[in-house]
Amino acid sequence: MRDRTHAKKIELAKERCFLCSVVTPDRLIPGEDPLEEISRLVDTAGGEEAGRIFQRLERPVARSYFGKGKLQEIADAARATEADTIVVDDDLSPKQLSAIENACSRKVIDRNEVILDIFQANARTSQAKLQVELAQLQYELPRLARKWTHLERLGGGIGTRGPGESQIETDRRLLRGKISALKRSLAEIEARKEREVNNRDAIFSACLVGYTNAGKSSLLNALTQAGTLVEDRLFATLDTLTRRLDVGDGLEILLSDTVGFIRRLPHHLVASFHATLEEAARADILIHVVDAADPLAMVQIDSVAGTLKEIGLEDLPRIYALNKVDSVTVPGTVEALMKRIFPAFPVSAHTGEGLDKLVAHLRAGAEGGMRRIRLRFDSGDGRRFATLNEVGQVMDTEYDGSDVIATVRISPADLERVRKLPGIMTQVKNTRVIQKAVVEEE
Image (cartoon, rainbow, N blue to C red):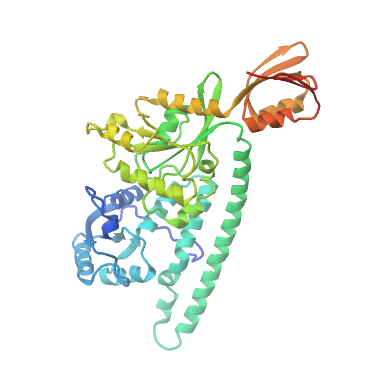
């Protein structure tokens, strides 16, 4: 029997999955097949769709999720299509999961379990693996009684309840201990990440956010030649990747790619990936990448906006990159999107179309937040040179005798930090003498 202190791996590969869901009025989107997204998720997880059914209700049935008649219809259809697994496009309670399993005599998993399975398969770094394991354990904890199989050997009747409940509580304590240990490990990683991000504060930074499979990684590659993984599937990227982008005239910015968002992204998953999203939280600007060729682009834009609000990033400056314009087939699509979101830049990571205008906008933002200064100081003054490299971007150096002249881009706040270094002797107009160092603002 498996170790119950570890989260269950769904392993949908090669399973025939019957898809179903309750569609409430607030989730009904005109022109969309309500089960199309879960179909793509199952495909990404390696499953094979056997069929699909949905039921329109004002709200799901509390005990069984589906109505009695629809539940029987699903059971018959799953049997007829030889489905191995019932996949429900919603977050089910343990009681609802058990009711559907009993009615269909098949394994039942919900939307969250499918997404967790995909995240587990795509986790590459130790941080991502810890984050996924934490999310899995947090999901599993309230559902432990349904997945616990000890009582099946004990049988029913008098005398079985007490020992069973005692063992379940033991398992719960083990899970809670594992969750606490994972949180501590992730807190250490988060602290280290925060220090790394703080050390880059002097350089203008932009972060790519957007719906999963919108083309963020492709755009990062097109702009920076990062060589990151690009696949036509959901959640191909889980780990934040940061690269330098040359925007011209020796000016560089930091460009980061992050995990994609999706409608109804599990809350515990968002919480687990807080450290990964730290790059977005500390960015000077967000680049919201949109798949302009997707008919549901506006729905996805709203979904990403909701997730950004949930994690407290709704007030960060934001621009839109309307990606995949080379794949748009409906005339007027891009123009219609640009009327609803601003500022928006039609681009194609595949052909390079529009990337120059996007880069020009980023350059303008970087220049607006940075100052260029020239410093003259003793070439042997290693401490001052180290400070410049720490807080600014050294663009050029030249030597004049025993002096070094450095041209530096630096934020206003860090410019003041340089000016306040010990030994300021005098000030003449826009020139300050710091020991033997002269600061000139261009």
